Amino acid sequence: PKSRDGIFKHTLFIALDTAVITSSSVGDGEKSAANFFYTDKNTIAALTEEYQQYFSLCRPLMHIFTPNNPGDYLALLREFEEEEGNSVLKSDMLSTMTMPLEVAESICSRIDRNKREPILSYHQNRIKRFEHSLQNYSFTEIVPLPDLRAIEDGEAIIDFSHMLTDNLASYTPDEFSQHLQHMVKLLQSFDTYNVYLMPANKIDGSSIYCKEDVGVIVEKSTPPAITFTINESNMNAAFWDYMRLMLNKYLRNKAQKSTTISTIKTLIQAL
Image 1: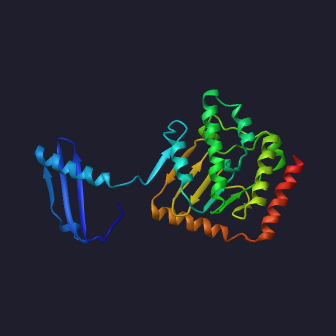
Image 2: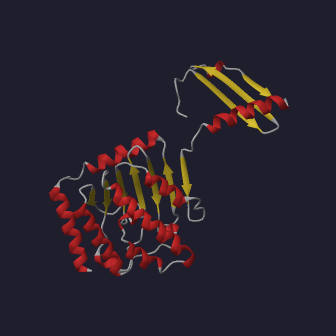
Image 3: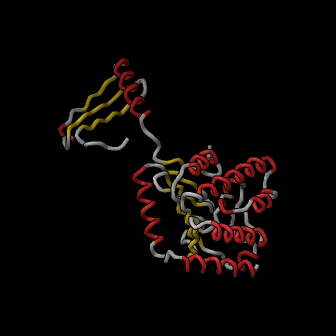
């Protein structure tokens, strides 16, 4: 829970079934507050119950996922993306939300068979949710395009692949081209979808996916990979303001969108 008026403060240190230290203060009176030490079993049980009741009102500040500890990553991601709101994604890889199903099928043919079907089913539903959300909410992608040589050499990393395989997976040139073509289609079909091309991130594999008034996913997909999901309102507001300030660096008009489409088409033709 958020800090309220700051008048009353209460601290509990509990060694289960052994002892409790508790202290209460008013305002800035911590230095003059009394500290109480209890070893009575009934008192320990009562104060332990008080702590558990308070803890039940709290929410985690963030969830942390790694390839070795993936937890319920897909379920949490689904919950996040089902929430409605405007979104901004800053990444150095193309978003899998704009990846057409044919490309996902091609990529999944190279991963563990046991993972293939659930991933494809999840991705198909994800595409539907994404395109449905574009009917009412904006999605802005801030992303660099890799150079032609990197794509041809198989160095264009697939976003999200660190949660699917033991090693990072890369696009084939044809897969990357198909993904770009679908992005162009989305740009031409939805006023609410925008792409801003930018230089590569200073930290490889890093991304920030922020949804207004919903939450934030902060991720580093290159080894050692880690994902933080956050829905605390103050942190979400801070990330959202940061992303909006970043967008202010770019000129948001129809000419900018046309330039982006032209740049992407040029790369497609080269592939």
